[in-house]
Image (tube, rainbow, N blue to C red; front, side):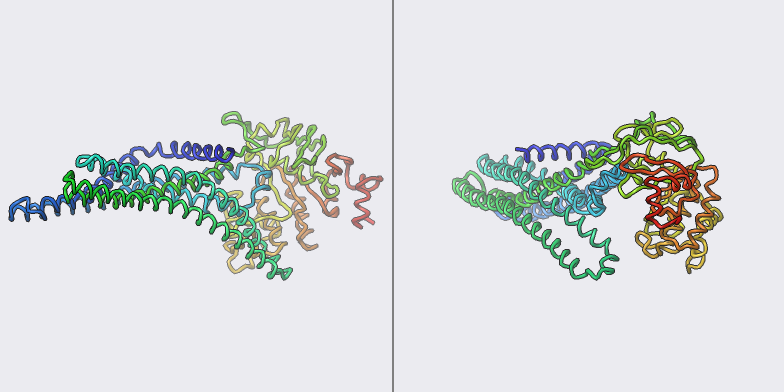
Length: 592
């Protein structure tokens, strides 16, 4: 019962989605449908031609010369119908359908991509990148593309063939036409039964495919670690198991689908015997002519093609139902950091105090922050320290609106950040994470993503501030050097300096550094610290610190434990008084 309800919901969702997408193209689609339908009518005319050939040409119904004139005229009409109505009209309709199809898929891909980027980190923690990529360019949209392709290629024309053939044949004999109509009706009923079953087969397969693609993508991304730990053998076996899983599921899906196809084909054989038997009887009784009998037999055989094409469309629709069910589930996923309604979003202040007011945060049923209260005046350099799991990184994610508090508020200059668009909030902050990510593009392109209008001088100055220009200028291609996937062509220190250069180019009023110098050597770290000290004058800077040696120059240190501020003061003050910070200093071996 639940499966049927879910199936109905998926079907309705697919139809609800396609309706608005097709509406803007109704004029083009109207022309395409008309041309495709004419193509179908042309097939009917082709199927009826043998009747006139036998009854009006082969049989001596007309005199000698008239017979050959009739043959020439019949063949001429046949060629015009075949070449113009069937081939040219069919091709033109297909061109129109294909253009509309790709526009719809483009909009769907763009909408899906925008939506997943608007969702918070909770969503991305549950869905791996391999799974989401497969939604955009893998089998989910591929199934929809195949369904729309086949519908555009055959759908209207095949329906027109069925309707026009039965209508034309009804002029000759009602019983033979009834048998043909019953064969079509039985096929349509079997198609509807198959559609429900095939939807279930494809849903099961796509669930397996999603899990396997995520696992395989993880194995590919971990190529460096696989080599470091000489785990090629183990990973190879893991991949083989994953590939075998999806292969077995694919075999099961195709066999079950083929059984449904066999039912359809078997019904066709039964009705062929019935058509032959009834047709022979009606011809012997003198109710139909030999030419009409041949036309009925040819029409029945010719109708099997359209019925098979329609069956293929129905089965593809079943897989498209399952596909869109998965895509729609993502599109319906609400963000836990929703932007205010259009027109109600407030501007993010360019400066001001950063305040946590009674902030609580829960993630995956675990309390991370427990009533956190603090104020960072504008222009202050503040470090957050504490044991692992104390909530340091969560604080920075709440500031950036990557998450919203479960309770309480994060405010900037008295304004609750939930009243501002998340992207606008993040534009005010330059962030250097501990493990920065770089796109597979040039150094220049990776820098310009934060400030597309930056000129050469601005780029160089930012790189010099981050102590990155020296290594960039020594590269054979300089700023045009491609960094590889995730920045794999750069060393850890180079990636860190490039990340700092990127935020320097951004030139924001607020900075967040998550152990930004952890991958640098001692000399480079000191140069970076000096550059930061000069560049951060008059701006707010938040440091998420793991190495205490990096935060001595901060104006203030907040010590977190179990999601609360347990100490607040300067480095010297906290190091001199008993407490968690002093214990951390002693354990770190710094300052002894």
